[in-house]
Amino acid sequence: MSALMPVRTILLTLALMASGLAAGAASPLSSTAAQPTAATAAAPAARLPAGFSQRTVVRRLPSGTDMAFAPDGRLFITLKSGVVRYRRTNGNMATLLNFRPKVNDAGERGLLGIAVDPRYTTNHHLFLVYTHRATGNQPIHNRLVRVTVRNGKLAPGSERMLFRFNSQRATNHVGGSVQVGRDGKLYVSHGENARAPQAQSLRNLRGKIVRLNRDGTIPRDNPFFTRANGRNRAIWVRGLRNPFKFTFDPGSSRGFINDVGAQTWEEIDRMTKGGNYGWPVQEGPESSPRFIPPRFAYRHGSTATTGCSITGGEFYRAQRRNFPARYVGDYFFSDLCGGWIRRYDPRTDRTTGFTTGLSRPVDLEVGRLGALYVLLHGTPGRIVRIRFNG
Image (tube, rainbow, N blue to C red; front, side, top):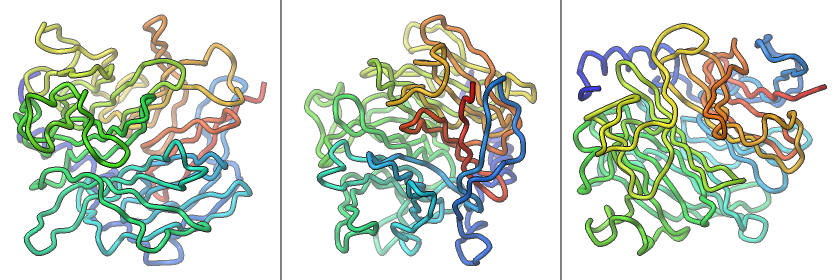
């Protein structure tokens, strides 16, 4: 695929605005009706395989962006406006923090990602990615911070900035996913911010995923540590358009990147140290020796196998398996416009359908008891839990 075209950018932005994902301040937490509430009620029926059922576990969730489970079973949820809520194991909801005064949530910006420290049970650390407002001589930018949870609230004065990304001019293609890898390092994504050629350059962080120590320092074994300078030494992979979500397989060395496409293709890319995925020179299943082709790609359209924007992704691994054994190790992924979840089997290289009829899914997480949790960005947003009942 050729480089990003302005007309396509306009059309995609309008589509996202219509879906709510790119709505700037369209869903502030200013009214009681907009507050998220816990529930365990039947949701509008999605089409599921035989033996599976779906229930809503959180309702009235305004513009959710990401989820992460703590070891104690609490489910943390980020809202685009700058708020972190959590669902207790008894189903009740609470607010952890409110960063709205410092968050710029125009377009695709906002509070975008959350990850739980592997030592959470002792240090109670969470990692967040959000778009910081312009202040004084500091322009708008994404930043990675660490916060500490104390008695179900943000510990006063605990926010620590770990890493700052480049300034933003456009309100789209800002990435914002954060994960802890099997190596214990932090991985954070950033889109090319509508400056497509910069995805190839080692002189900026746009169109990249970076790798960091959990204190925000840059590991010396990063692939470009000796070639790049300053913060750019954190680059782990490049050549991405908008890596909205990515995740690691707890049962293997795999890491998959969901890279939102432009005119024709949506991609799932295998994360490889130093990898270059080709944007904006190519997109989709092309085979230039200069770039790593996608592990799987699907076309834009309105069928059960096409869509417009790849969003959530999660490998099915659980402490207690609920899904049948044939699903273990499969990669579940969703499309915002298609309203579906499909699954990709890395062992057979086959993709099959799983669920349709969802309202703008944006994130997927597997719970401790083996259910699949789906964050929906519809109006109103909510979280549904999918279980196998036999």
